[in-house]
Image (cartoon, rainbow, N blue to C red; front, side, top):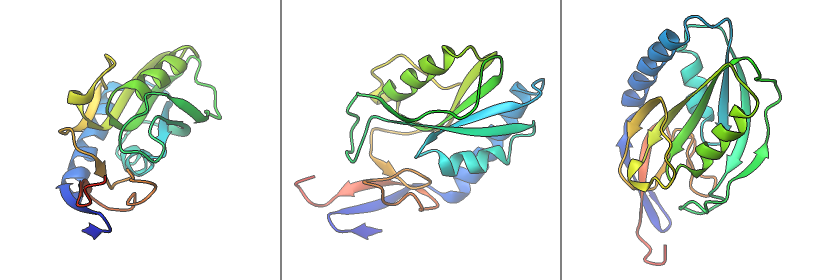
Length: 182
């Protein structure tokens, strides 16, 4: 898929994503089988496609809430300054919580979010990330469940964007810049 100044090459197919999401749902169901209601917190904006698919594979009662945090803006690399743009609507104190993230890169965003949510005293809190880039990690953080570990490449699709574009791609693709200015 060619755009002005860059090309998107498929990295993970829609079929592979669907199979992995199904498996993650089964693992999460088993881990939370004793909960009366799981609060699934999606980190906007990148996780919205993943969370929509994932909750349909989780076999325990769920409620969904969203938190928007960002350390990217319109850039391809993290600014390391995490800003919370939208907080949760519901109360998570004493509840079982699953935080759903699109990608863990440097770890700054998920670390800050988990710290903030732990301060609200959930009964239990876990993290599931669709993608993990451990080679970029600057903060010691790890999701309990990960869809795919990927190399240090900028990716789009399946909810992830480049300057708010390409979230609608059914696959995850790498962005290969053809313009030497990028």
